[in-house]
Image 1 (tube, rainbow, N blue to C red):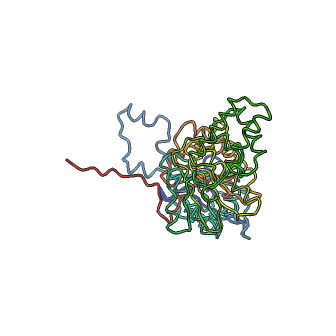
Image 2 (cartoon, one colour; image 1 turned 90 degrees about the vertical axis):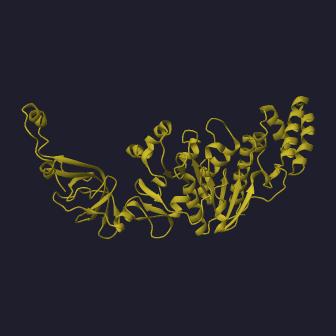
Length: 457
């Protein structure tokens, strides 16, 4: 530890490298103290040269035609200095303390040991094995309660490894027996069935009926006007049973009782018949239910109109949450990929309402949420704010970066340059923002891009 510019403090210090390149920005180092071991993160590495530090020296050499010393001579004058930011102290009793004491000048500085680094970053001995600290090789094992119960956001541009990371999270949840439900737009998770118990169900084949879902879902799926919604809600309250036929039977009766115009009655019935023709909300098919260690993959990329997809997806989320709250199904992990398509920030939707409910109240009932998106700006802010841990992969959109800057601070500038599969992890699951290289999946990833096999003429 040196004091060339300013003395070391409990916040940070500078130290001289014995070998150039032995420490890089982002690495972790440790310094022995009487209290225990101080762990710090290297934020900058600088090269100083006593010969070239004299102002105007090079200009004077050129002016008088003097030769500069040889490169070897200049290198002998170089001093490599690193600046480090203290992140914590591992006490002699093994307890973690905040950085409260500076390292004495002249103290030796070492690479941080795996044990000290794991302790300071908040890793567990057992838990979610998500990968390794980038470039350092220390295994990143996260506490499942801190990670899943407080919800997770996985953010990154196309091709950054976003869906792959969700696949790893799904594998880890299934390994510990936690049921997983995935809303899958592109068939990227069907390969989970190669190793785990998994079912794939089209969203339009989910066996939900009007009596089991909110009328809001039906109104959104059919794009009803406000007056049409009023008629639908009154009919839903008076329907003799839960089926679509029961609802269709109640609509004319309610329209007559409350004096709705004939045009409104016809419009509502026409929309309900459209649902019947599409085969949604008809009760045909299996209910979205799961058991321990099982994965339910719901295909939401079946080519239906976006409002219908959102209405059905929202109904599935609502149903699962109500089933969990009533104790009918075990605690589960819900993964929503391409979440900006189902939770658009620019318009209200029942699906957004349902996911917000899980984000706000799911923690109490063991309904855990993972949302993944390539558009931070287009994702519902309320849901994003409820995600206690964020995996941020490569991202270069200026608008998205500007939105993340208040959350990530100076770490934001790293995001455009991250390799595929490396995530900046921040939040309740880690003590400090950490770059983690996500491990390889145990099952094949279903989202590998097609290659172009071209024949030469």
